[in-house]
Length: 228
Image 1 (spheres, rainbow, N blue to C red):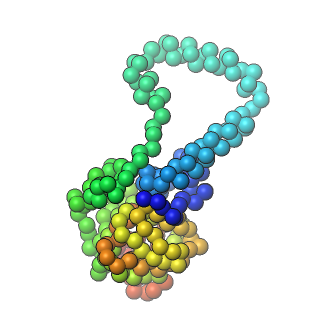
Image 2 (cartoon, rainbow, N blue to C red):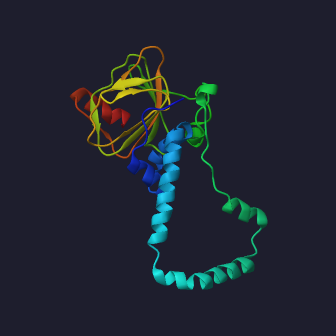
Image 3 (cartoon, rainbow, N blue to C red):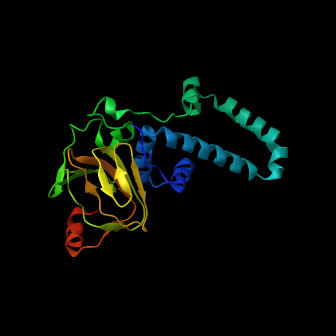
């Protein structure tokens, strides 16, 4: 898998800083599992953020560094935490690295808490001809979509941000071809009309932080029922 569409720089910086809304963060994490290029960019963003944070520390803090360190060590000794707890807390959490092509039924690890581990166990809900979805119970704005091959979706833009990670199949729009591993990182300035490719259904996971904005009156009427 070699994705051609990646996370925007601002999205990566927000993800690194922990400032990305939770549903968008799940989709960003799903992409990072499958994209070595963005994982390296994330490491670069974290290094830059750490350097900037260090530069913004007050000069007076440097003089107090030894005193603060001694006080922290004294508090830790008084607390006497269990060694196993300290090890868990101190250990960095590595990003999982998934290869879904090795098992077509397997979902990326970032999605397991919300949709389970496998595609075959999903219970899809019909929302329109050729379009099915599943909405996460924990995060209603985090959804999975299964769209039939050759399906043309309504023209729409976005109220704010949208992240869509392609898991299976593909689609084309004005921005190009989006295939497995690609992510569509979109904002309110983008208007597009995805058309799924022939062959197999396009399965993707999407997160929105505002409802879609449809151009056609029929799509706007249906939107009230499907809540996209």
